[in-house]
Length: 271
Ligand SMILES: O=c1ccn([C@@H]2O[C@H](COP(=O)(O)O)[C@@H](O)[C@H]2O)c(=O)[nH]1
Image (cartoon, rainbow, N blue to C red):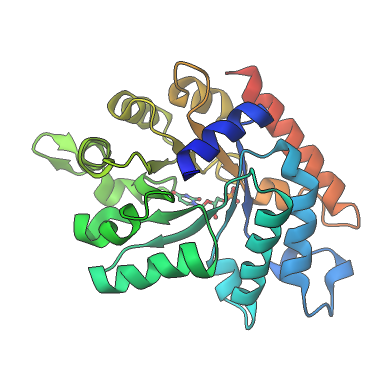
């Protein structure tokens, strides 16, 4: 089963558009992990187990693992844990890859074969040949940056090209030319709800990964209103810090579950 099909099934089965972001920062871990050599894995496993029932997807961000010795091994084990314990929940590796073709081939092997992710985030800036090694893996998902959530998204992504902002060209080209195998999705920040509405109008039912809720200030109602498809799905609305660090104390897993359920329910109220 391909990524998009798995995601559609999970939207229905879980009645959730919530993507739980896994950005483990040891400086924010509860005291129970002090002096724990396996803290990255242990903390994330506990969060995954506590939030799985509320999640349509998990999104580990590779930098939070690669920054540490043995961190990539922890990421590999974490994704293996998700794939084993929750095989119906897609894993999106947030790595924002993009390079010349032969290097991109190695990044595709890294994301899909080494780490076992269902999908990976990609930077489309280097063009079609840099995306080809990922697009060819048509059972896996390619989640391209379109309009990101950070303030600097305006620097390049909104520059006018032939009368239209660059991000609109990205959306249109990926939807009409790169999505031949139906395995593409886009990243659109919740902090830009008007642009989200325009992008939804360009790409039809293509899934959108939406970071920027919670810590970055994005609005849930505007995100759902402007981003949902006709059947009330189409979105993977990510929250990382808002769930991971809902409590810094011993009850961190229960607090994460509560935060995930609360956000899942808030999203559903606006579908
Ligand atoms: O435009 C983008 C693309 C990716 N991200 C990533 O999403 C999460 C957001 O974390 P929060 O704690 O919920 O703010 C993080 O992994 C980013 O690297 C993004 O924020 N914006």
